[in-house]
Length: 225
Image 1 (cartoon, rainbow, N blue to C red):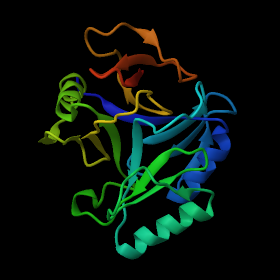
Image 2: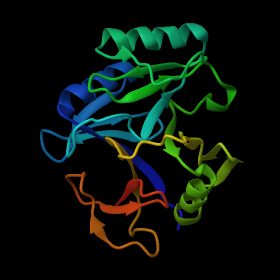
Image 3: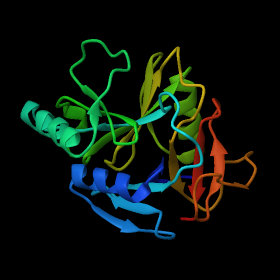
């Protein structure tokens, strides 16, 4: 069953305000969906950032985060400065000295602005959606087998899925993986959940979506394709 990544769903205390931050940062359009308090930011690769009313408080690091692509060192600096000007801030999650920059959006959701990397050229403003895991290969293999995304990289410390030149789905080993899911989850477009998973409503999405989970109990959902 091959399906498509439809959205990264982000819970927010103020969905409209947070959507405006991301739309302005990524130079994208924002539009209301499913009521005035749910807002979609459409990215050029077809993936949507969907901001919905929060069902939980922001406590600790999210299990998922966005990596933003840059085309040059100057572009990376421009993105970082824009994020801070729009209401984001630099963040310290113990990253030490690294070539990418870690930030938080106005509601504290972590994201990175990457240094230029050849593998992310042409993939749009969001290079990757990254998930902290205990076993990245096992989680990536589960999603590849059940959702039809080819596994393009597999290493004990990281694994990657990608299809059709869009954003990467990446899984990294984190021995201190957040116990809580946090405020982000992936939404895929398909007619049914993976085999063996019960058809229950997504507890986060305000529109029709079916909840599912990977082997480490990280939530994702399926929306009718």
